[in-house]
Image (cartoon, rainbow, N blue to C red; front, side, top):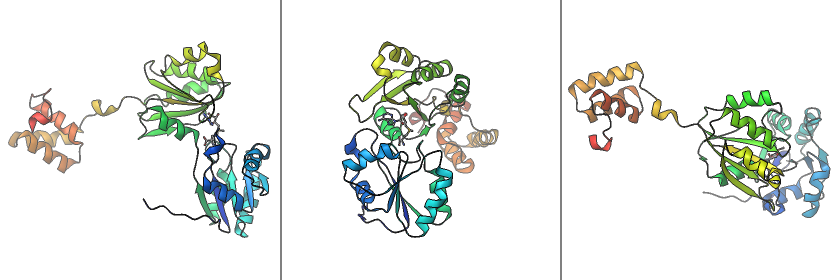
Length: 298
Ligand code: SAM
């Protein structure tokens, strides 16, 4: 992979700078360079970002950009960017816009043709997923579940059959109730990983199940403290229950009359675009050889 080094900030660029989610050493070298060089830093809470910036000797002007003012302030920031100022956006922790302010600003900047450049780094959901041991090739990030129990249950019900790994954020105030509602909707045996206080002193990653998670937290008060990412294994794949369309099955049936099974399967796949394993399974069934392995028919 080609790496490039581009240390200087450019005029009129909005930088989205990821900052640590707990461990101050997780800030990237480039993040510090950008933060030191921009004309201004937009941050969610100046009182929160100041210690991080002081720690690294960064004294650029700060502009507060939070959920209550970001609609109005984003237009002003876009004007500054158009006038040639470079601005970095940081949030209280992790990657801006991931359950943090910044979307109106990025949208305004891109609509105005301003260059928006990410300075990637920590993100709790990615850190949790990478260490969870749950499938990571397909996942869905669903943010914070709704606060009210009835809305939360409906929210979980809509995700119950999703085959992807499910990722949620949750605070210590609601984690127990959220796990309880999750258990009322999802099958008890589904794997669940609780990732708590990542990169911090009491970092904990617990492997449990949907049915066992609430009891686990209820039994240990210290386990309910801090910040949480909740990850749930996806529903079993539907591949085992998928079937051919009637048209695909008809093509296969016709070809099986005059061709060996392997040829009929290959031709059906080529003609109809059906999935090879489904065609094989159906071919074995039609020819009365169910239970035979695919290799055995080659
Ligand atoms: N922008 C952040 C990111 O990139 O992950 C997320 C901000 S969101 C307002 C805060 C939530 O992220 C917390 O309530 C928790 O669910 C999760 N979170 C943040 N830091 C965490 C950590 N160190 N360990 C576990 N979860 C964390």
